[in-house]
Length: 532
Image (cartoon, rainbow, N blue to C red; front, side, top):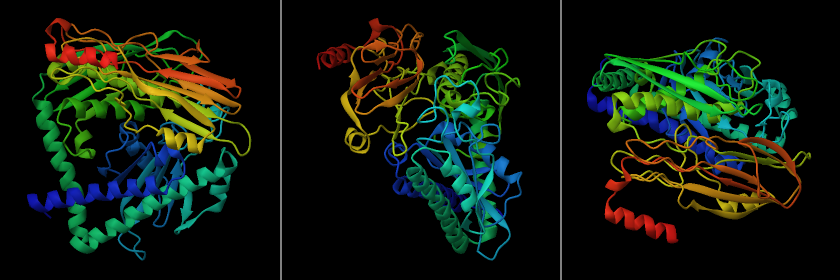
């Protein structure tokens, strides 16, 4: 069945509306501030073959890796009425705190034919492991990072499987909050099925299935036109991670981007072998970063779905940092290594499309985890924004998440009401953006006093190697981590007593262009900002 352009556009927006409504149900139904305030979650709609049809505009590192989770579930022969849960990075997951649920969708309760899949992924504030918050800086194997779930049926014939639920809740801290967040994910997936059935009633099943193919074809046509406009060639870049939590030695990441007509291949040969610490990243995470970059250097308004990603191939040697084998520790790979992959692939594309690539942004998620070990304790998790890189046509944005994360902050009022924490300082970090014709964005200072005995974990980057300026722009400032005024390493887990203050100063973005070319009015604004 062929669809006219108007019908296609209506259905495409309706599919995206299903994914967006899923996200709203998840956010409003969750109990943990990490989901309901920071919105560290993502939702999407897939067809019966496991191809991405539509996604909400949520977290890039979640969304680009979701197809691997759907493939893992399809391999288990799911049935109508199932809800599958997983977080195993070696079987479709990203890192253990990101719990994914995949639900087959049918046109009616009586149908045995799967029309598509509803998928939700949410970062749970604790999934067990050796430290509260499940992001231990010193992990050497995945068993230390928390409960590991291969694809398992959380619901059968529409009813929650209490055996699986009990196993999950027995292995996590704050089990009441975890159960509520799991229920919110289940509700989000249920909403997707209800809305897709509404669309079938409105348009008919045949037209809906045809529209799945058509929206992918549309995105594929648009992305191939963009790629074809890039100059063919091989483009190379290299950068490093600042240690793995076990050593401080730099860990190289290399990428060769090959543009050949309408096809792009990104090869990570030359990247370090998998490491002892927790910055290993599953191949799905690296692939997600590549997808994000290609969208950035083409037209970001192209609807993101499987058609958008079909022309892109990603290769990484097995056993490497970006394609590790079990039981490698990976919790930092999803949050920090994904950021560096983004930086490297953007730098390679800058050779082909310099007018579309900014200077380096902060290049880290500045993960801060504070939690207690008692039975009725708490788990606070936050990623903290920083400076975006200066652009060819404008300054970088101050105090935002960049790259593979797209979360909000935790409002001070919500943080202090929910946890035994007191925010001492929260504001922009003056002078942290790199100078240039277009200045880099400013970082953030976040200072929090812990009012109970707790464990603090920090997983951060750009504490030694500054975000680079380009085209004559200056580098942004490196970040700093302090506990009671003492500088601590980029990756740290430490038990602290009540009254301890943790301060995170996030990096600024690099500048773009010669500072001497900066507009006088912009320079005056900079001076005014410095006085505030």
